[in-house]
Image (cartoon, rainbow, N blue to C red; front, side):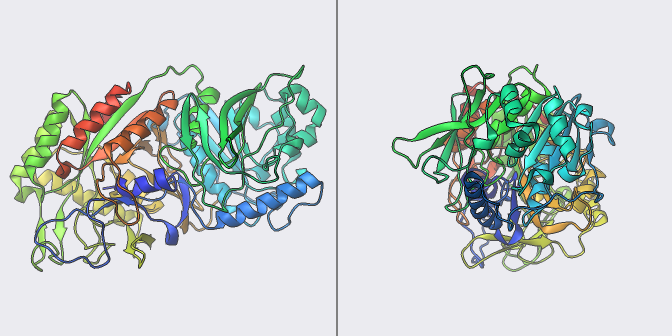
Length: 615
């Protein structure tokens, strides 16, 4: 299963798995007993923590990028030539794959809007642009079809072919000519919604003329900077939106800043502050606009996909997409809960207790079922290898059929939820280890993700999914229509294999460099992402949201405990998304007390629990 433990520390405390991470630096989990590299064998089944990928971008190169951006911003303010190490010319004429979401699969259309996502590919960190673009495209996939394209490939007239256009400015260019002039002129002329994120907005104003820009939009990007009046980026730790205070957690030295927009006022057009950045480095703290809107232009002063958490300012962006792509959307707040890691070795009384409680509360739920239990090295069986199937454990299988007939929706959660007979990373046992990605625990007791399984392929992954289906059938279990990748770690090839049997995934997912721009896929560079609502992702699959993580009472692998109060608090923050979800998962072996607290608390916030099948 996807461990919300790891996922949570990443999402809430470090990096959104809507976020970029290098494999050698990605860790995060949520588990019971803090795992170690070589835990002592025990005949009593332990439950190792959930391992979840970091959300958002958490690469060490972000610190380098932030340093150069701060320097380039100072030079722009001083009127000097910008740092050539950071800027670059957007390549023109290179052919890229343009990804259309929702057109190749009839089921893929979740809405009627169309979005063009433009992104940077130039400069030392040009690869970041593709990662950010995938995050944006995935979210826009909730609203309809999406096309992605490098900004250097833009041609005249494209903007008016889409409901809205989103430009992700991740490369701080050295001149306005780095972006095609046709984009500036079309952006200024269009009446369709335009969302501009982070860099190069000042070149937009320069090109169309500062006076013309000011007259239309009421603010002056050419006199707007990432530094505050003291010449530093300060320390923005919060973003206020819809009366909620969201977190912004950037490591020291890795913050490139949030643009301080110079709003003109007076007789100029009104500028609406949509969200407010709070700089806590000053006493008292100071505030300035984080996101603004004037006319059809929405500007966001930073890329919200770095160091993301489940209570993060990325929620603002996820909600603002409704204004551009589905402005008539009514406010409603739905919730989902998934019982996790069910397998033939379970104590059926624990599974039944959780299911009976949810059924008694009229709470529809999902339950993730693993195809087969295996302990190839006898870690929990006195050194004797053990494999259990559903047909061998009819009492546990009966608990599954009870769930399916009492408000539950079955989800396939891998074939064995482990890999081979090796520690991956813990003990080789079902439910503890990853199935579709290599992992280890380093000397600092953190989980390290090391790349694809040897021999990874679409056919191999599809074969694992098919084997699980066979085991369900042999045990008399229902056949699920939804997939959940164990520990949320898989490759693009794996996702394609799962899609042969399952049209939907219910999880957080990984998106790798090379997916949009073509060429070789780089499995060392990816962005992890959770979603606040269903989306069609860049792989063309419908993904159901899980955005709150899971209950973990004990810290693990350098990640803190995640308690009902934490999950409920994150659900409260997610209320800012006007048609969003509060979705968490839970292990029945923890009993029902924490489950009761969490469900009761989420209901009290005004959420209505729904079944995955209703989406």
